[in-house]
Amino acid sequence: MEYDNQLQRIKDGSGFIAALDQSGGSTPKALENYGVSGNEYDNDEAMFDLVHEMRARIMTCDCFDNERVLGAILFEDTMERDVNGKPAANYLWEDKQIVPFLKVDKGLAEQMSGVQVMKPMPNLDLLLDKAKNYPVFGTKMRSVIYEPNVDGIELVVQQQFDVAKQIISKGLMPIVEPEVNIDSAQKHECEVLLKADILRNLERLGDDQQVMLKLTLPEEAGFYQELVDHPKVLKVVALSGGYSRTDACAKLKQNPGMIASFSRAFTEGLSKQQSDEEFADTINTSIEEIYQASKV
Image 1 (cartoon, rainbow, N blue to C red):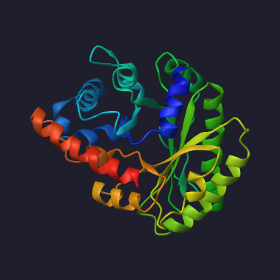
Image 2 (image 1 turned 90 degrees about the vertical axis):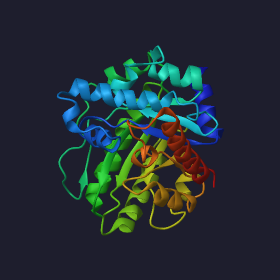
Image 3 (image 1 turned 45 degrees about the vertical axis):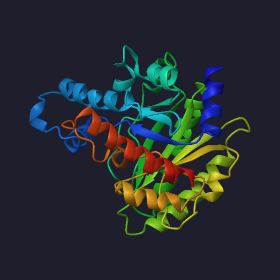
Image 4 (image 1 turned 90 degrees about the horizontal axis):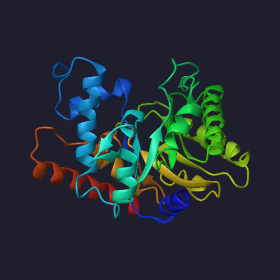
């Protein structure tokens, strides 16, 4: 029943998905952007304590509401920590009716054939079982494409869909994220190959299987409309990928049917040093701008 309610919320609800899942190597940069320098912590435990404080401050802000925020993607460490006295995923769903997702990949392998596939995930089943102890609806996993290399892109998409099927078998909704690097000199050529491979893999899914897609905002407006309309795609969400919030929202408005799932662009302008009122004003401005772009 819980899963069905969450499914309906993602399918029919208005809003966007906040990506609060920086982990490992991306956490120091996220903290630096938040005004926390590397000399304020001396180990990973202290680093994750600080980033959890930031995430909890966002989640508990009154303006982080279900009228504009559909879901939130969490890192495993966040899922296992409390927010307002209960597990983060429970707080999001039970107190805010915001659908929780879990980042499940373990980072990227070395670049080859113009792409970075995901590192092996030997303990994925255990992590998915752990997620089932919380009201987690789905998962997210990221690969990166740099060049229009046919074999490389095929490898990325095949791996993503193989893992997606494993996730579906556990009763969770996978977000497939084959990111195209925004600095690629042949970005549109990468997108052409990527869309064709995604369509091929969607056709191989069972009639009762669906995925979500998280894609870089395309060079050509409306380029992913075929994926937005596909019956085996629950939702197509867009990553900001290094674009500023203003640029990402402008591009998103050119792609009706896609909604935002921004990370850096979402937390842009937030600072540990801000008063609660300043923090709330900043995050509210961000939420409203991204929400309006996602409504188009």
